[in-house]
Every structure is written in C-alpha cells, then in structure tokens.
Length: 170
Image 1 (cartoon, rainbow, N blue to C red):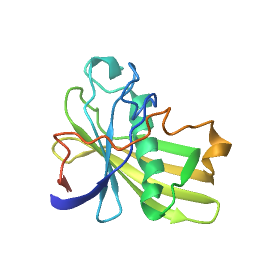
Image 2 (cartoon, rainbow, N blue to C red):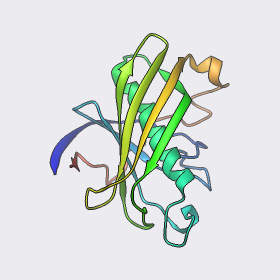
Image 3 (tube, rainbow, N blue to C red):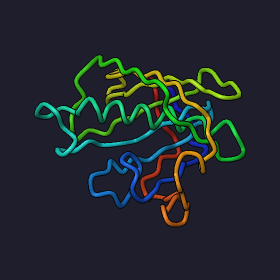
C-alpha cells in the first residue's frame, strides 16, 4: 500500500443522495483530495444499502463511482466546475460487504473544452478492487443544471474529527 497525503476535503450538501448529510436515505459520504490529483470517497454501507443480504446494491455501487469520478474534475480548476453524466459503465468484480469502510477512488483521464472523462475503483478494506467505473461528463455552468443556492443546500466543507491526513491505496 502507498501512503497519499490528503490535500483537501470537498463539500457536502444537505440532500444529495451520495453526499447529503441531512438526507435520511443518503449515504453521507466524505470526499478527500490527494496530492496525486485523485479523489477518494470514504463510505461505510449499512443494512439499508443492500441488495442481496449482506451485499451492497449495484445501483449504489454505481452512484458512488459516478459521484467520485464526476467530482474529481473540481481538483483541476480554480473556479467550481460541474459536470453532468453523459455515459457511465460499471464493472462488478467482487461482492461488496456491508458494515466495512470502503474507499472509492476517482481520477480524470481526459479533459477537453466541453467534456471530461474519468475512471475509478471501489476498494475493499484489504485493497482488493471490488468494482470499476468509467464516466463521460459534459461541463455545464451550475445555473444550467439546477436552481442551486449554496447556502440553502448547505454546500460546505464539513470537518469531522476522524478526517484522515493520509489515505493508503494499493
């Protein structure tokens, strides 16, 4: 395993399915920027996130990969840049257990004036790759995506006592 320094933490919101801290159905995931320009999502699935007993639902697996890869673009620009998913592919390699912390890694692999692409993986506690993802996103100004008021949506960095300073990745 290689040690990677955390250089920043990304915002959470109020109601997003993946990062919303007040969404009763949400995953409440945290996102950490690494010095190597990869983004890591940390998430622990619970019973409400299952498909087969004891296993993470494939739709949630895909949502975690999509959100992490899509957010990775924010590390590459000074101003806030947003993307909307145009295409996404998930490959499922291993069952993902509940009640174990997962690391979801995302990176940008191609960035043009209108689109960006990225890849990512969900890593189990032992570092094994459980799922991989590829996404293509169109760059859009936030006002063309949704009526988004940052204060109303509570879009802010929320510091937690257990935020890591280093993240180990294979």
